[in-house]
Amino acid sequence: MKSIVKVLQWLGFWTQPYQNQKRTMMPLVYIVVYILCLIIPAIVYIVRGNHNFASFLTIATETISISNILCLFTNTFFNRLNLERTYDGVRFTMNAFLTDGHDEIRTQVNQLDRSSDRFFKIYIRFEVVVGVAYLFYSPIVSIVQYASSEESPPLHGIFEADFYFFDTTSNFYQWLLIIVISWVVLISLMIMLISITSMNWSLLHHINGLFKVICLKISYLNEYSDERARTQELFATIELQERIYRCVRSMENALNVYMLIQFGTCIIMMCMTMMTLILAKDDRDLLIKMVTMLSYIFFHILVYSMLSTELITASTSIADAIYDVHWYQWSVPEQRVILFVLSRSQRMAKLTTGKFFDVNRETFGKTLQTAVSYFAVLLQLYGSQ
Image (tube, rainbow, N blue to C red; front, side, top):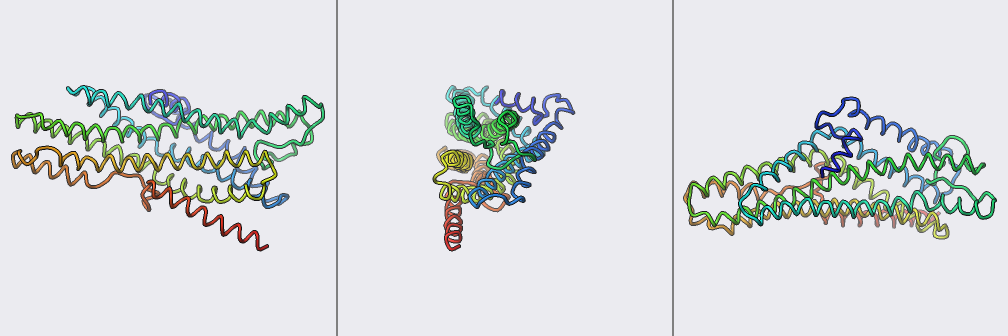
C-alpha cells in the first residue's frame, strides 16, 4: 500500500504526512478539467440530436461511465480523512501483530502485503488491457489506414460523441492533435482511477486479513495456563479487534454513498451497453468498445461485492473462534469478557449502498438481474416502435 499512498500524495488525494496545502486542492482542479473536457461537450452533443438511437445509447453510456469515475474522485477528496484514518489503523494493527510471539501470526500478517501487491499487479494489467482496447484501437487503425493509403479514412473520436465544440473529422492532422490531447486526458484519468480503486480494495483486503489474524490469535489463548497472562492477552486482542472495527466504520463512512452511486449507475450502464451491442452488431469498432465497457463494469462491482462478502464472513468468524477456546474452564470474570467479545462479533462488519442494502454476492446477483430486466423492457419498447 505504501506505493499507492505515494501516488495519491503526488496527485493530492492524500494529506499525510506534511502535504502541501495547494497540492491537496489539486483534485478539485482535475475534476473541473474532466467536466469541461468530457462531460459538458458530451451533453452538448446529445442535445444537438444529430444521431441515431444506437449512437445515443453509446454516448449516454460513456458519459455515465465518466461521471461515475468523477463521483469516485469527488468522494475520495471529501472522505480522504476517513481513508487516512483507516490506513493508519490498519498499519498500527499490523505492526502490533508483527511483534507477536507466534510465527504463524507474523507470517500471515506479512502475507497480507504480498497478496495485496499481487492483486494490484493483476488489476493494473486488467486496466491496461481495457485502456488499450478502448483508447487506442480505433485511432491506431485510422492512422495505419491513412499511412498506407494516404487517403483520409473515416475519422472518429475515442468516444462516440464529438467531445469538442468544433468539427475535428474534416482534417486528419487536426483530428490527430485532438486524439493525442484526449489520450493525455484519459490516461491521467486512468492513473487516478487505478490508484484510488487500488487503495480502497487494498484497505478492504487488509481488514479482512486482520480479522482472520484475530481469529488465529484467539485460538492461541488455550496455550496460556496462567490466568493473569491469559487475561492480558485477551484484553490486548479485544483492543486490536476494536481498532479493526473502527477501520471498518471509517471505510463504510467513506464508501457507502459511492457504493450507492456505483451500483445504481452500473444497472443503467449494463442495460444500455447490452442494448448497444444488439443494435450495433455490424459495427466492429463499437462492439469492441462496448464489450470493453461491459467488462469494466462487471469487474469493478464484482470485486467490491467479493471483498464485502469476505468482510462479513471474516468478522463473524471471530464468534466461531471464541466458541473453540476452552472458555468453560476459565474464571467467571474471563467468561464475562468472552461474552462481551462474542456479542460484539455476532454483529457483522459490512459495507452498504448508502445505508440501504449490504454489499455482497447477493447484491451483485440482484444487480445483474435488475439490469437484465430493464434491458428486456427497453428492447421490447424499441421493437414495438
